[in-house]
Length: 248
Image 1: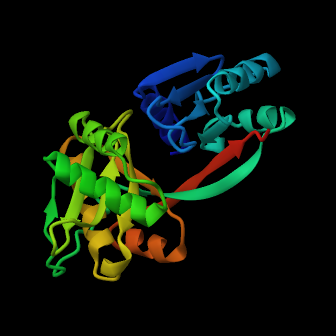
Image 2 (image 1 turned 60 degrees about the horizontal axis):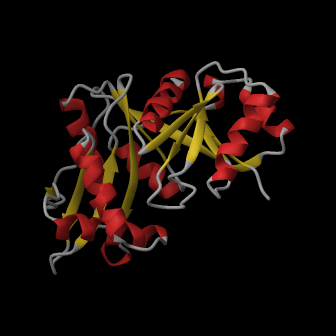
């Protein structure tokens, strides 16, 4: 499964506003933000990069004033970690990921939450604001545009509305590639937690992508609490992803 996830990562970065292929890497740049989580690279499955390939990749990030950063499944490109470490890259994080298939999906019942598809500028902005509140970012017009781009580009954005009309919780899922799709940014605002919103939105997104033909949906988790939520709706452990960064 690691190779499938790694192949997905390559295809997904090629869909970025400014993709760039260097040696055995694909870098995805978004000129609307300097966020390292939206400007990073990944290796091609099975890549065996040379020192020159790694130097050229570093140069592409430095030329844009960005910190060189990569995300990848190490089992999908075993030779890459050593090449990066020899160039000075260090581990930023190691995240486990879970995979859901149509056979394992379990849709929660009895929560009473209505999952909606944002359609207006105000709704996309509300989703962006809610997820920024959860993850510590700054809501912006560009963030709302990115949300709309996900929805219009074959991916999906789903949310549960708060009583005041804003967003209580939401998540996004990429458009599928190589038979799988990445579900990301699952977040519930603090005032609405422990009401089943995250599980409901996650299951709704997975079901949407399965209906569009995806054979699996995968996600990373940050805590044992979130892992339990995802496992309840049918996500199962499959592997790890490595995050590496080059400091100044």
